[in-house]
Length: 347
Picture 1 (cartoon, rainbow, N blue to C red):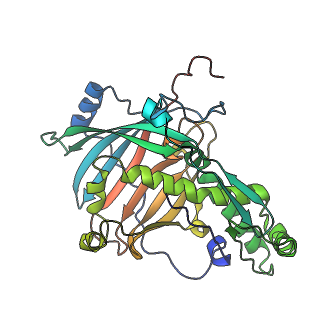
Picture 2: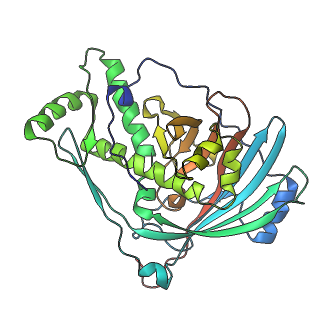
Picture 3: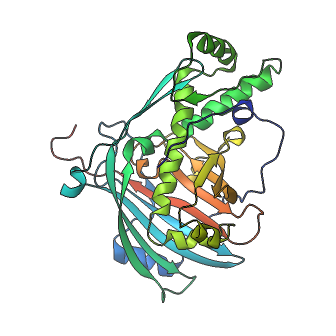
């Protein structure tokens, strides 16, 4: 993943003029009976999201989530089941060179270190299933390498941070504008001092800055996982509003950009996503572009990325469609999340 340097100005952090394109609401559909029968045969679990844990080691073999993907075309629904689980690195993967770490600096003087721990995820995709038909269903499997540190960053704390900054600005509209920025080169002492002076009344603490910096790589890592999951590419083609010949013309390597719209983040019901234990959830609008053209817009439902929701970066729901709000809609909902057994000798 090519990580773009994060640069968020006042319009990126604070509510500003300008409207979002029409966004689909979270509207999830229950699995049909034929799909429930399939999950029983495949040994999948369709309910129960375990409480988050602070255990050492982050992502572990056996940590797994099960998600339901639905493609809605009018009243017609097509669905897939996806299981993503942590796996031990094989011998070949253990020999890969270590991933490079990254350090970013904000214009308040905060230093943010982004670690990179390579991990393997096993993916199973079952489908497609129609309402009462499994005649075209099959099982596909894959193995995907990810940066576990990025997945563990999550997006929920970034949402909370921006909501708090917005609240401070609404409470005192006379606060001066502040263009918050992060880059790979440290700012001067004078620049950092000036930034801290403007950030303090907004409640933009170093912890909140780190959450905002970490949100971008977490989101990119999640979409990297989605784009490499067998079968999901074909589902996305149904809703993405960019001619695929453009991508072919570019040799299949058109630049893909994902932009979270943090200034429109809002807290939503955690119970609606079966999240107990006092957890919070947020709706985060996003836009995906291909070759510089808007291709997909939607909303993410995000919560803590602590295990067992680390394989999905704490993203428990997705609802997306083309930028004009027309055509098919794709939805993803995490149905279950379980912790893997601790490895022998692990804390």
